[in-house]
Image (cartoon, rainbow, N blue to C red; front, top):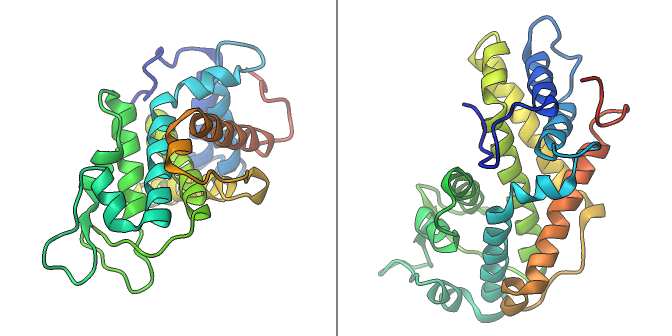
Length: 255
């Protein structure tokens, strides 16, 4: 599986440590001794490799396109909350399916409309995270690859953006460390369960109330510098939170 980072190959000491931690996480001989949160924290350190201690700016740079997609997602939900779903869909070049009793659009089409093109694997990860987020059905909602909007307040945009950032981070982690996880796992079920535990840990971290910040109130704010600053702050807060909660020793650990 290799790495999703286009900046350089994972050859540095922090990458090696992250891969060893991922191997120990699912290895039958050390299973249970390494937590999902430690795997996430070591991965953040690997992303920030380039300084000692790891440089948070390097880690953020690995999610530059993801942050721009997050701005679009926030703007879309803010438009829906303030102007209604038909107006929000039209603003992104989409219309609800003809003849439907409720508004419905293909989730993949909506994801493609919110994406930033030309991002390679990072774009693919953002697309997957977006589709997964959009397909989470509301109570009584429908599935089958169709996104069915429900009424949303303006603050909901901020919560969904935070969840998207967490989902994108989890997917990147599983891509970058997947080879080590797969090689160490004694079978498919442990691999799947271990991956789920990592994703759930990151999801809980992204939903932590301490990361919340005053939400943006207009689509224009989301798409401009305030949106970029807000999203960057949210992602940095998540990465720092994952690092702080990962393990008691210094982030550099024993390399």
